[in-house]
Image (cartoon, rainbow, N blue to C red; front, side, top):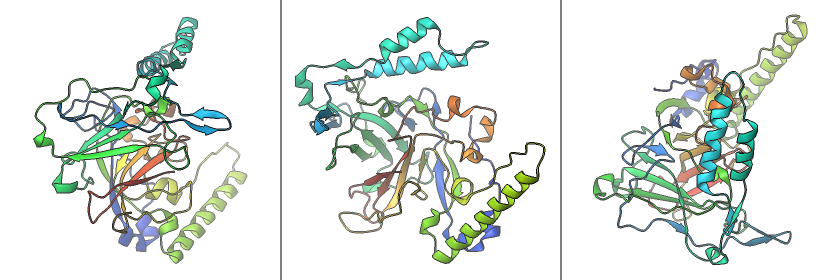
Amino acid sequence: MSRTTPPRPLDVEALFPELAAHRGTTTRLHPRPGRPGAADSSVGGPLLWPADEPWPVCTEPHSHARGGHARGSRTRGLRPADIHQRRQILAAAWAREPNPGPTDEERRLLERLGREHRLDAAAESGPLPLIGLAQLYRRDIPDLPAGPGDCDLLQVFWCPFDAHGPTGYGMLLDLRWRRSSEVADVMAVPPRPQVVGYEGYVPEPCVLHPEQVATYPFAGLLPEDLRARIDAWEEALEEALEERAGQSSDGDDATGVAYQYDLSIPPGWRVGGFASWHATDPYPMNCRTCSASMRLLLTVDSSEWDGGSGSWKPQEEGDVLPFLAAGPTEVTVGRSGELNVFACPEEPGHPHRWCVQ
């Protein structure tokens, strides 16, 4: 089934004609549970990975000390198979009618599946297989740029533990571009980590329903005069709604429309368009090789929509409750945030950069 974004609550260009010059497009990926194959664009599905090519690994020690404790040690964690089984039990339990929720027997099983497992100390120093997070074919994604050498397939990996980088709290990403036509024999059984440090790093297999929509920059990056007019409009709208609520006697709970949440940047997994900077002030994201201003390549989001961005919920899922459908990939970035990955527009082979919002 395709996924269709509802029309925006307001025509933002009719309100602010200057925005037409800033309009862009982004491809909402709309991942939903399914059974993708290696020849499909997917999240958490099998990858078109050559059988004779080494699988990406992490070689960092993951043993940064914080407050006297070793954070991120790969010798302990949750087993991926237990994570998948736990999710299946919970999904079935909450979908059960007429009495949703886990039974006592299921709760005991869930408790066992949620226990950490410890590995031999030798596991701390060996190469750790990365998790294949997603793969995207250009033929499916209108806003996916060509990779280096006109590669048509982007494959995204990450480490299932934190404790990377100078702070000892960062994530590790590995993006690979390839020409899909050059892959003959596909690796049948890729290596998997025995345990992971965080279940949010383990995606559920999802097929994609790409949809290209219009998008506009984060308000903080618009020209100052235009941003000021948008702020004034939102304040006036909020005051009018508060006045209306104060005069209403029928429990009217009408909500307003906001540029950030309804009119500019859609939530969820997407390719291209503009990054949101709602958790930090915007800062330059320049290529560390050539200093070019980088462009948003991919957004990995913890939720397809939430209470503030519900106007973006696909028309086909109008009656679906958020806790049942808003997190189909089961991926969680940081504290339920989003990961924005940037690419160099001058040379796609230059190293990518990313930030978490």
